[in-house]
Length: 389
Image (tube, rainbow, N blue to C red):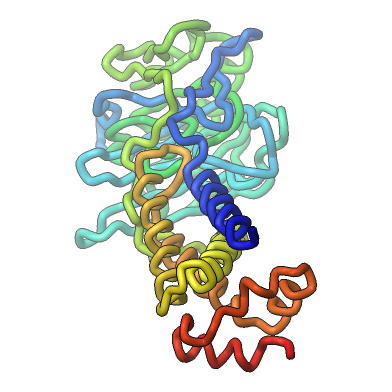
């Protein structure tokens, strides 16, 4: 009876790990909906809008200056996500992206320097407030970038000069094209210019957007203008050029999700990163413990510890491979390493004196006391020293 119960526990642990690693098992519906009380679309937890073809947004008179205006309203101010991303499919690089980071505004640029991507970014603090709209203007010349909020300049960033070439490629809104990084909130309008804007123009544009003076906005000559005034359907029309229309797909997706991303690419010096590491280690420790007990007491396996660790590695690898096909999950080698480590820690707990005492106290001590011939030498020695009595 005890061995049957142990088999059920092992099956339950494995099922729970597979569910936790692969849920929801499919691409969820794209959570993008038109606003009912004005122009705009709302992004839920998993939402994305994108340009299906490589755009001509880089067309510029001088090839240097550019500006982006986006009118947004976040649902929350305690999380973040990617609001806009300009993606180059041929090199799989997001040249420019605009993010909410908690309640900060984050701008990130990626350029290829000697065939290697080089990132630069900066933050503007306390920009986003829950359910408060904010009109963000980013205007840039060759050397500097200026950021305005609601028509007022808040930051000048030297040596962060953007060019119209950074706006080439596919435009994504609400999520990142390379990793699930969804943003929750409303986008009410978006305009892109092939020139830098003056302080006066920025303020005039802000007033035009917020008072629904659409004709005035169009007369300013943007190379792309999305009013989000359709109210229905799966297309957001570019009022200046229909070739750059945006699509609202039926299901959420990540265009080029990484496959078994390397640990050095996944590493982030943040609490959330280390929290996930600890969760992965702790999540696989029960698998290591119970399967080690099962292999020793039921299967009478000579190399139970090694077999358990290999099983943990195989289960983790299977999950990470399948996660590459699930847009809500990330496939990476860091999880493979930490999950296997957690399995190893679980096998180590098998010979812990405290654990042995607990099992004995609840009447399951017999499962932990197979004969020494059933154990590898090192594990047998540890058990003989740690078993009570």
